[in-house]
Structures are given as structure tokens and as C-alpha cells.
Length: 156
Image (cartoon, rainbow, N blue to C red; front, side, top):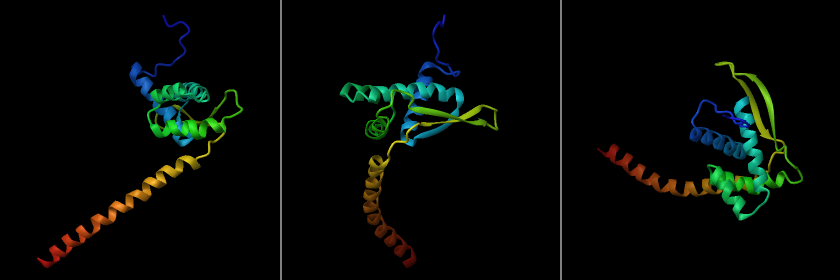
């Protein structure tokens, strides 16, 4: 019997359900808000609140537990560097659910799940900029080869 078991099954296997919730929480951390159905948002809210409470400890063990539950190292870094500091002084209630109405296709009630206090993104935005700066250095090396091929085709 399922006494005191509050988790919804969503018509999925246990592994699929864990992956779904992990994905929702990871994307909530990365994007600060996600649009989903109300039932999924309510469950993802529970998981997100627990992971923020865990991350507020700031220990190595907490970081490893959070890493096992999140799907992205970038999300882990954002959780500890921007989400947790922005939630300082709060004793829970880190997320809010804003209802958006029913979805047109199947009539499912949709909502927006977001942080109550939006985390600062300045720390995490520096990493993609550094990656973008490194990428153009490789691109010019390919252009001369393309010009040589084009010149060879016109010569024929």
C-alpha cells in the first residue's frame, strides 16, 4: 500500500520520473524560471527547495550530493555561486508557482516555476563568454583552406 506516499507517478517508471525531476530542477537553476504543467511544477518545487536547503550547508558532502542529483556541472556551480547567496536569510519558500492557464493542445494546466529572488547571473555569464572568445581563434584557420579550394575550382 502507498500510505503516506505523496509523490505523483506521472505515468512513468521510477528512473524516468527521477530523470524528469532532475532535468526540471537543473533547468530551473540554469534559467531561473521554467514553464511546465502544474503537477510537475509542484513536485519539482519540492525537489528544488530540498536541493537549495542542502546547498546552503556549503560542505563538500553537500556539493557531492547536489552533483549526484543535478545533470550539469554548470548548474551545480550556479547553485552554489549565485542561487544560494541570493537566498541568504530565507528559511524556505525559495520558489513560486504562477499559473498561466490551460495548454491549448490537451487542456493541461500550465504554470511558471521560478525563484522568489532572482539569482545574479554575472558570475556564470563569464564562462560562456570565455568559451565564445576561444572559438573564433579556431575558425580563421579554416578560412584559408576554403579559399584555396575555391581558387582551385575556378582555375579548373
